Image 1 (tube, helix red, strand yellow):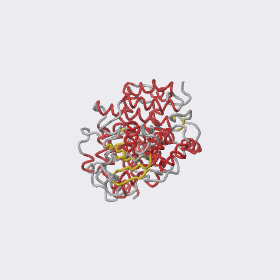
Image 2 (spheres, helix red, strand yellow):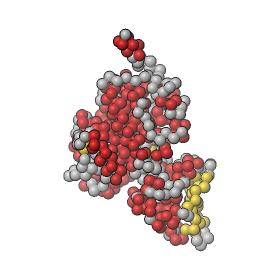
Image 3 (cartoon, helix red, strand yellow):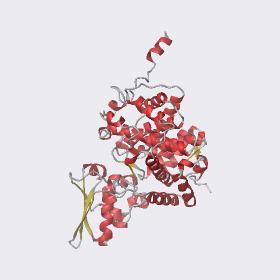
Image 4 (cartoon, one colour):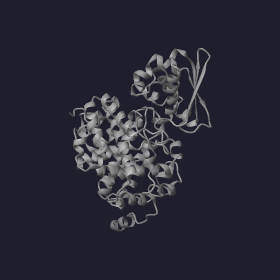
Length: 462
């Protein structure tokens, strides 16, 4: 009887009208197919940026705490922690590296969904590849495909999913991680679909936590759980075919979404990674246009902080909802209209040093923050901002930025990304390793020794 019941409830992945089997087939069936050169290059851009962000945050107190806690599950391991001398097991290393890459709010952004795609997908790949000794080309292809799945699932449920309070980088990141690791391990189409279904039972993360360290748990869990989903599928675990899009599946449970047709259309022809962007400033992406505007006004008019009587930042509802906040710490600062405007006008820059705890508590910054008032401009497009500065001498200066630096209209170049990662590695004490690491990342498809490459990311690497 038990055997009959088990057979009765065994899932049938031949029901491939569901989304999971269709996406699983796409990931698995592209094995041996040459992916577009433009897409692979964008993958390398994403990874160069990922390594800089991860190494730059490796010794942050948040990562120290994570490593200390995760070590309680077992000392040591075979997977590198970016910017640190430590090593942990693959799931734990994936958790820490995903957190460190996302920690500074300096990582990449898929604009249609506001997913930060690389941290939850690249971190598990690198952890697994060190354990199993695979090639750079395998990692690059798996990353591109994982990011594609992650962002397409995000497209299907946006914007309702995020609006309901789900942190979409974490909730969709686990699907990208599962798909990427499944591809790296050579799983079949059916196994990959099961991995995606298993990931649906591990998808979590809420927007309310964005200004706290609990946000990072969602990102780290997405990376770690993606490994678990793929390994379970490899070992024979199964999931329902409609775990993602069924009547009682993930999408309905987390807020609905009717974009599945578009999300699965033109697979292999239209690539979501080409909508990826990279940040010139370590803060919320919707703040970038106002920083550009403040920097331009400061440079053009030679403004000093003591000349400023009032600052008005005009933007759409998303900018105000995300950024109109009181600053109590560095996390608040990274998503604060008032702080971003203040440091840009006071210092003439908005780098990692302007979003530290010291900068958040700087009395001069706090004084200027109090002069900044956000104002709704409903007609302003997402990602744009206008800044109006009233000076003590009665002058009024204005500047509008419709496409911020780093946007698709004004993208960071390969050279910009190289310089960004070089700067972050220098700040982490790894300046000597920056050039050889970055050179190898730009030629990742030719890399045969990923363990040697990863040694360049450790703080005790020579």
